[in-house]
Image: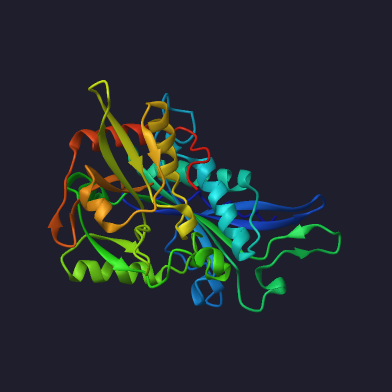
Length: 351
């Protein structure tokens, strides 16, 4: 009698190691679903012809997972993803712009939960970075990554999809605590290009990040930590991996001081920031005034504080701009981090 093969043991990463979950189309009698496969990210799995690798033709999102309230033995993953719905909505918007089909949001949530459970087993008490990736899939695949109809009339997925769960880099935490020296760099396009040339995919979170990474390397070569892009017509845009915020303290007629929180115009072709939206929702509830650019570099110099905000590094104050020290406000930095920690639904903020 032949013994049945034993199922492989679930992958559990060691301390400081990552875990990947692949979302694989699974054809069945009811149509096409998605099955999950938890694996070691060091094991080869992506085809060398995948257009996400060969062309940067894909989209992604990066989220943070932190300790969940009331988590304990038997409660599943003790980590909770912050702003998950906002990130999934932005992933869908980016994928729509690139015409890449996506698995349903519920499948991404299942994949993230499976990855976090495996990650937490090998990294108890460690916050995590959760990256969602969707590529167009292999070159020459049926449909080329576009929506394709199967014979039964059921839409099937032709891309490549995965979730990577990793520990938060200590360097990001250190940068947040010490502040950032930032260079202003010209992106080389004007602030109206997004509306005029939608094929440039301005405001989408695509895998084509070579320019952003080159900008950060250039900043490092000049002794800076990060970059704020400007348009060719002089408007402040965004960081390579972050959104720009600035604040002004405004004297009121009754002798008190109000606070105005300002971010660049979305219509200038920047990526809508999930962290910015969450902070703005909390700031509005606290009675702060909200502003939406257009901003010029001189506005940053004259502000009471400038920050680069993102989902992993959170709220990082800018200490220097093009080598010159600018005003910093520790109280406002603390308030902004508290606003972000509230995890409010961002809603619609910004023209």
